[in-house]
Structure formats: C-alpha cells, structure tokens
Image (cartoon, rainbow, N blue to C red):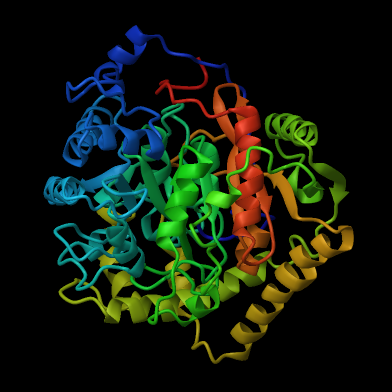
Length: 546
C-alpha cells in the first residue's frame, strides 16, 4: 500500500460514516450465491476445508483421511466455485498448473516417512508480486509484466518450497502494490479486475494484499502471503477478519519481490489464526545472501519457530500502552471494539497503561512519500533489469506502456505516483538521504522506542483501521484512519488480530513493538485470540447495507 498522501495514515481521506446492518446468510442464501457446495465437501470426500487450520489439515493427512493432492483439489474446486463464479471474488489471478504434481510428490515423501515440517503438503496462495520460476507469471497485477516467468524463485518462494508447501496460485492485488495513483481503488489491477470483500461484496478488501486477504478469509487456501510497505498486510487482514504479521524489515528477504521501497518493503503471513500465521512466518524468515539486510535476522527466529509464543496465558503480566491521539476517534465502530478489546486484555491479565502518546506521530507522512518515490524509481528499475522477455525495462517504459493502453490500464485512475517517482534523482540526493534518516529516527528511536521506554511497555496497541468502506471506482479509496504508518516507517513489526465485528464487518486490533519483537507480539495476539474467539467465516453478503 502506498503511504499517506496528505493526512495521517495510509491515504486517510474523509469517508462517510459507515451505516450498516449485520447480515447472516442462511444456507439457502449461500446456495443462491453459488457458495453452498464448496463450503464443505466440494471434492466429495467428506472433509470440510472451510476454516480448517494447519494443524487440522496435518492431522487429516497423517491419518490418511486426506492426501496433499486431495487437499489441493478441494481448494482448487473452492476457487472455481467462489472466486470465479458464485460471489466472484476475483481474489486469485491464476492457479498453479503444477499444483497437483507438487502435491503428489509431497504425498510420496510422506509415504516414505519424510515430513518436512508443519507445512508439508499445505496449500498456500502468494501475492502476485512475488517471483516464482514456474508456469505462472509474476506481474504485480499489471498487463505490462505479462510474459515469461522470472528465471528464479523469490527467496520467500524458495523457503516455502523447502518447507513443503503447495504453492496453489497467485493472488490478485492492488496493481503495483497500490503505488501508481493518488486516487486509486484498492484491490483493482489491470490484469485481474477488482477484488471483492467476502463479508460484503460491495465493500473494499483493502490493499494492496487484497487478493490474499479475501482469498484466505474465504478459505480458498489454508494460508497466504502478502507484502507491505505501509498497511498492505495489516489493512486487508483487518478488513477480511484475518491475522496479519508485518515483520521487522530484514526478517524476511525482499529478493525477487516486485518492489516499492527497500527501506519499508517486507513480505509477511496472512492467516485465519495466529498459530497458522506464526508457522508461516517461521518458514518464510531466513538469511539471504542476496538481501544484505537479512544478515541482522540471523538467530532472530527462536529455535523451533514461534511455538513458545503460543501461550493462551501470554497476556498475563504484559505491560501494554494504549495509543489514542490520531489513532482513535475516526470511527465509532472501531472505537467501540477497541475499548472492549482493551478491557478484555485487562481481564486476561495485561497491565494496561492508558493512554500513551506516540512522539512524532503524523510528522513524517509527506517525507515518507518522498522517500518511497525515490526508492521506487531506483528499486523498480533494478528489478526490471533482472527480468527478461518483458514489454518494459524501466519505469519510463512502464509509464509509456500505460499511456498507450489507457482503456485497459487506466480506466479508473491514472499514474501520478509513477510520474512523480520518474522525476526523482538518484539515491545519492541529499533530499532523499536526509528524509530517510529523519523518518527512521522519528518513527523508531524517537517514536515507538521512546514511547515503550517512557512507560516500561512491552508493546503498543491501537485499532488497525475502520470497518471496510464501500468500493468506489469513481472517486477512489476513502480511509477513516489507521495505525500502520509508525511501524512501517520505522521498519518495526506489527501484528493485527480480529477484535470483533461492526455491523457485520470485521475490525482488527494491532500490537506494535520494537525491532525483532515478533515473538512477544505473537504471544500477545495469540492470548487475545484465544481469550476472545472473534474470527468468523464470511457470509458473502451482497451488501452490508440491506
């Protein structure tokens, strides 16, 4: 997701107050939407994949109730029934033609006594800005990148294959990770069209990992991978009732991921439970010689992954600071759920410090955009130089490409951010270097770290964002508010977990910490999840207003 253009957190522009009614569809209504059959047994073997956890899927494969192939078939059938027909979420750009062959090979390994780990045979959807050297394309949602696959997997994809996952397909996204226009609509790409929110089809799935968010919420795969620059994991996770983990920059390699900006970009897991997200994060993380920033991640993932953080009593004794100021007050629905979440955390044993001022919040919005514009031009040109057989080789080419086919690539919004980035100079410019150093200092040591130290806190908590807004292709996105920017600019971790529903629409709460505090944040999020149980499957309602 691109950063704020003028106001306080990702593209916070005024949005009319959400007025909605809770909609719970009956089985007959689901069937009328074309959803009923795949909700349970679309492949006919009696196993229900809807809301199934990784542990449940592994138990079924261990017992012989399922095979990896059968599991992949179940999810592929569900994609066909829900994503391409029925509610037509448009969350999956393409499925992997080799998925069943990969699953067969993993089944053979299991029969031979080899199980690679907790993700062996588990189907995963990954965002279409993550390179895969296979028969799928990597396009960032753009027609301009249609063509030959990359020559090599992204490091993240390599790690996932080593862990034994079945890469089931590529998820749709906000084109170019929502860094093309100042008036874009999240979830739209020239290649895939508009992703729809499975909780209310006229609502936005949020960007830029909108496809991953909608798909995993609808159980089109077990778990998914998104990417974030500022809000693009936590926003769609919150809007789609998921857990999202935006890691410390450097914990997960950026090699082979279509970039916005190296100072803030990271991939991260999106899942229906904290444990599933933690399992995926452990598999994704690792030192990559091609990404020097990952050297600092050596030894940061605990031995055995994050299993030790999965403590239902993990909030006992935790000292948490409540962020208010610009992070509340923009949505009465989010505020109500946030207040209830804070009280629930108190009841679960947390020591609550209410409220905590985050120094310099909102002071780096314009300069954040300046940094990203500089880095986008440099990083994208470097990425494109490593791809062969494409229709474009530079950002300048890309701008011209879009201008040549505006009816396909720019029917709703333009490419102002591309043009602003193209006008920037090299990364040696003092304007860039000064803005980057200032932003990191204000958001990190003098921001999040200062707030934690001033009150002896383990983490900060805030509403992730408002309930999902009505999609508007005419006027573009409208955000009431969000809390992603401080952690994004600092490069620090942010974990969002479902906090309840506002008139049928999910709302999340964020746990924000210092660098490399993923284990602590996972512990707090897991204890909150286990003590509340807010996750609910989507209903595919046509609208929240009816």
